[in-house]
Image (cartoon, rainbow, N blue to C red; front, side):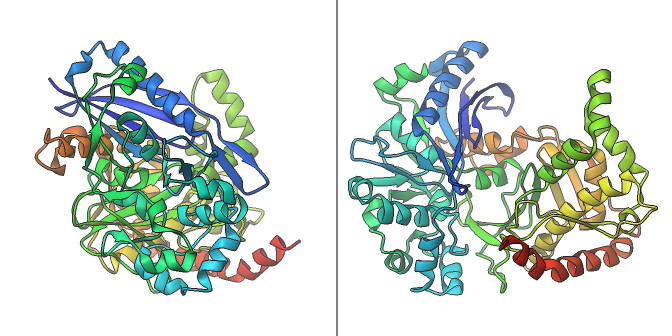
Length: 506
């Protein structure tokens, strides 16, 4: 029996998972690391923490599962995207990594737009020009830390740095290159036009390869640090937004999933990049060769529900502590007593501004339509409906280009049957629920790795990893019930958009 170790380098830590070649998950280890927030918009991590996390979890996983390290067929990766880690020619970090949440480079994004229009940028990169992305962060280093920029040999994302430490080689894959937003997603090469507009030297970008590319083999030094066997193949993998596509089975056109975490996204697979005339959705290069991953991510879906729990549902929290249950169990009981449409209450889930589909950093959260008859259940239900209606706008954009007949629900938010049924009703689409809700990134990385070393013939191997456990069908009159609610949801945001911007100036 051969094994795959998949590392998922997230925002809060690294999750290392061991899979057998038949798809069974045999164990996992998590190592947390710090994220440093400061100066309002600065968010950094120490790249050495990523390496320590991979070494520690690899050793623990092998020891815990008692496998022979020589039976590990491949190491593969999923990783946080849209970062900027500057390293020198020896592979040493020159400064902490600016991660995806860092938005200090607003001036740099504005400078790019003076040289290339937002639409032209979007057509090349599949994304808007924004301070969230890697290239703009590198521009900030150039403008504010010129000595570090001068010493920078390559700029990397999290998984690319760990691959470098394991193999000694500098590479990135198409999806993480895409997260720099200076990759031409049609040509699959660095865009001279965007790099020129940004004033960034192309040679500071690593070589770009497919996600299944074997980046090298584990060196003697890395093997000692990680408890691995020297020579073990390392497949570069993909960014976490794309490994989730593979892990959710979205490996052919129309296969779609919705991941409900603190943030949430809907993603599907298409044969070509999809360009929305309002630039509300983005396109990633898929891990499956020849395909693209169409995506729309909102900022605060499960986060809104968690905020509601902590601020309004203190009684449920206290009761759950006594009963040994989850507060969400009691919250869901209240929601089930409220009808679809929450008796007229609308919630705008924009507590942290919004990415897709609004792209409005000034948007705010709001309850609208409260009357003396409004119940706590109505308010709770409106939060789940508001987040889902926001995602439904993204889904409807996708459905103009891709046929979507069912959606796989993933993430912590998909644990509750109440929210899953709300999704089915608002999307008016069948929702399917797999056996592992929070392993899409790890499973996707495992399959990518297995394909890369020939352990699997193709990406259909994901069928051995995931099993559909249940499904939810939309209620009979779902479209009729929710059509007016969706219209009011849109009207409420449109009516408050200017007010939100004005409030943000104070």
